[in-house]
Image (cartoon, rainbow, N blue to C red; front, side):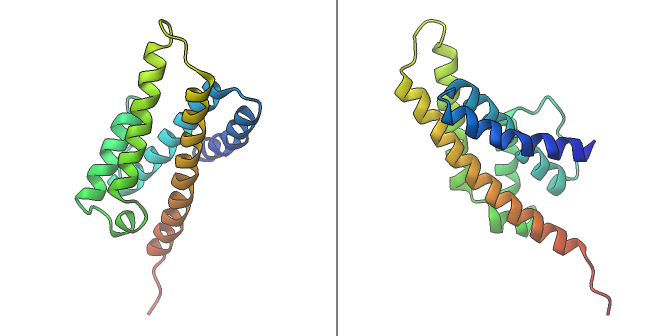
Length: 147
């Protein structure tokens, strides 16, 4: 199941890129949000040693990772994620929510949704880079060198 989840997240990256390229910005935002949530859940699972489950959406994931970073639960987490970046994620998520909640009453300009999608993709790219470095260092810390 773990491999299936990893494969599905990896498959979403080209889908998000294709959605952006073809100007399907709403779809791109949803894919980006899904990938952010999946990566943050993996971080929570590794550091906290608990599975957040499906009830944990993007907001609780951001809050939990921020809590783990702020309380120095793992030195590797502090090394690869900072509070300012997590605040940027939350700001983006709040902007996404405000656009999606007002969508039925107010049409959103192409510029606003395009900017949201591109900003989200940039944040996701940073998250993926930080996550990969964190994962690599985390795996190294698990390997014990025989004396």
